[in-house]
Amino acid sequence: MLFPAFDLRCLRRMLGAVLAVGATAAWANPGMSWPAEVDAALARAKLPREALSVYVADAQDARASARLAYRAQEPVNPASVMKLVTTYAALDLLGPAYTWSTPVYIDGVVQGGSLKGNVYIQGQGDPKLVLERLWLLLRRLQAQGVQVIVGDIVLDRSAFTVPAHDPGRFDGEPLRPYNAAPDALLLNYKSVVMTFVPDPVAGVARVQYDPPLAGVQLQPTVPLAPATAECGDWRAGLRADLGNPERTVFQGSYSARCAERVWAVAYADPAGFAARAVEGMWRELGGKLTGRVRDGQVPAGLRPAFQSISPALAEVVRDVNKYSNNVMAQHVFLSLALQKNPVASFEGAQEVLLQWWRARLGDQAPPVVDNGAGLSREARVSALGLGRMLQQAWVSPVMPELVSSLPIVGIDGTLRRSKSKAGAAHLKSGSLRDVLAVAGYVHAASGRRYVLVAIVNHPSAAAARPVLDALVDWTGRDQ
Image (cartoon, rainbow, N blue to C red; front, side, top):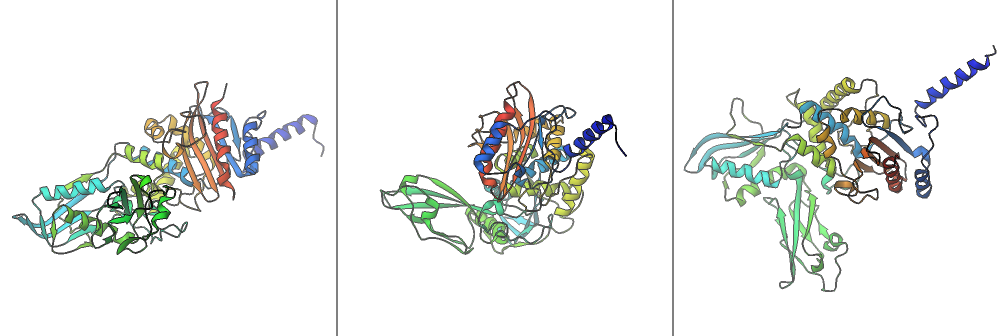
């Protein structure tokens, strides 16, 4: 059968519309051309266009045509940009003022400064129970009249059930704090902060360890390098042996030219960190313990003596997004499930997030969320789906909290070294091997606000940073 000319034109338009929304979609607007500066940046990086998924659209008007959309419906690995999904869902479902509590129980009679019985500390997922707050928690315990515990300190971590975690499995870096696993009683991100302070008169650098860890031999000083030694790669110069949980050893030296430096390291025995930290801090505060610190559960019916309350979710979300804190993001994610179940799991959190996504963005394919942090090879989301979510967030009541949590390009957070125009955008960054991404809001020269999602999945993704910078600058120049 022969089609009339008019019908052929209609058929071509229909086919074009299908291709425009397909997995290999190019441009949302028919006359749109690829930005020349982005093309040039891709050429310099030796990356094909197909490595990039892009969505640029008006932040407020989701009905308007996109300024730019290329491979926007292709599911891709977003790396840490997935934290935007987790944090917006949490702000929307839990509210910016949501807090976590850590109850402390005293099971026994306190008399003359001594408790004949056990103390229970019950973790409920607080993602920011850091050194200072652990100190305050134990000081509050002493304020209850407890100086000597004739019994045990019991750590209840039963609120989370997560699979066994090998901190070196993901990238072979088990001592990097970003590889810490979630824990219902997460103390100081399971990390030791070492502060090096040179003392030229004594010829050493003194080392302070926080928190203090019970039962660990901690080398108190490191020899200073010759006076002519540059600071350089000072961590490598220390020749640190940190793989033994029983002791810390430095076989190298430290340059006085480094002045004071701080190094945070994940503890070699993550499962034993909380017990060592609690006992070490308790004894440093002058407390005495006749028993031990161990895992267990709070006896039924026991009422808390007091509770440690976390900062509000809005503050936690800022830490998660500004500095891409993986374990905090996983805690926020698991907390979605903890509101509906007595014990939180990744599967429960995934179910809650999927229900939320369908309620808010039913017409968009849901993301594949692994642990909520983007520290995953399996996580997937499309640039279009993420862009639509950001448009929805822009007109939501929690927009100010979400936007203010994002790094400001060229100013702070993970994008403080960005080469894009400083202050022109609030964007979450993400990077893994073979992945580089940014997503958030660009403040354009015209005064309009745009959603920008740009994700590179390619073996040479690390070379794509100038490409993403070019996209940010192009989005900002809309006049």
